[in-house]
Length: 122
Length: 108
View 1: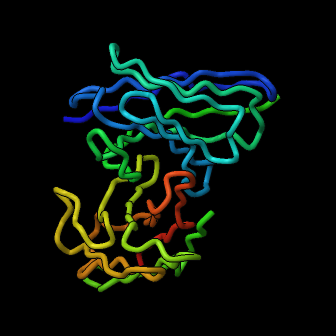
View 2: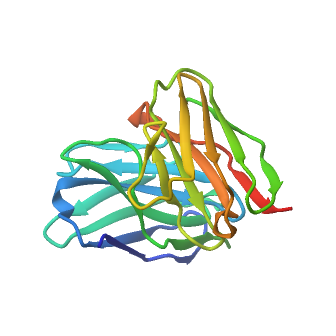
View 3: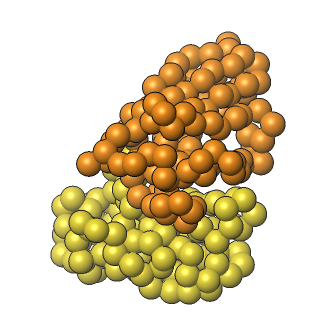
């Protein structure tokens, strides 16, 4: 079965950087797009970024554009989110979520990881 | 960005009740509308995609309808495991995927 396992969260000071990872198994990782979605404590869901199956296409929410970078390593079935210039408002649980479209993006989420908490605080 | 507005933000219901949640888009999203269920401390779970298609493994008491700007999620007979928060999400534009604010279904 599909499994997505995030890691790399923690407490970081404002302005610093952090890299999240998402290890995938149970499906052919290299043929599906993957998203990052976050949820601030007690708040709703916010889409963050998406990367296509081959890494050639990437889109970002305006709130993270130019600060976050999504990437993937298809040889190791792993997704990344490099987060720079972190702000207090980036504090959230970060989920990786699989797109159901094989070879194309359908832009919804059929499997989710358990999430990793990022806390930006001095 | 397309704004998604859910109503109500919360509701109280009893086991066996029929529950309806509404989601309205600020512009037409055709049928590119999806529904998720989230329980406390857990990741969201896909229930409905493309407005009315039931995700594999989801009980048939869940159904979705609508197109354009107005959508509904209906639970035909609420079960104890259905008390959760429900989110709609539009997938009309990859450049800015957006969610509704959520509807919390609580025990009456």
